[in-house]
Length: 86
Image (tube, rainbow, N blue to C red; front, side, top):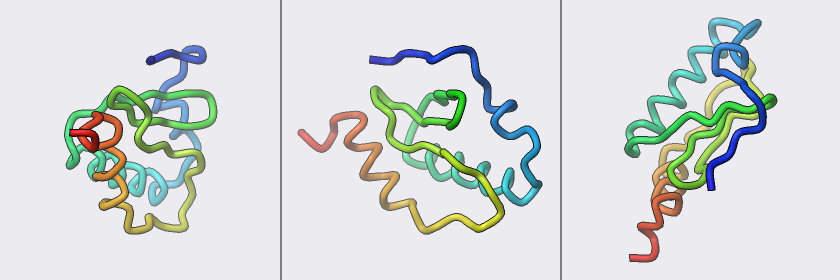
C-alpha cells in the first residue's frame, strides 16, 4: 500500500550533490524507466521507485559509480507488478 512519510522531493535529495552523482542518479532513473512506468517515492533519506511496491531505491548518492543493476531492476519490476506469479 503506498504511503508517504512527510513531504519530500527529489530536488531536496539531490541538493548539494555533485554533478557526477546527479548524472548517476539520472542514469538509474533511465534504467528503471526502461523496465516500464514507475512512480518516484521520495522520503527523507532515499528516493524509491514504486510499481505497487518499492522495486528499487537510492539511499546514498556519491561519485563512486553505478553498478550493473539493469537485470536486477527488471526482476524487481516483475515482482513489483506481480508478473512473476503469472
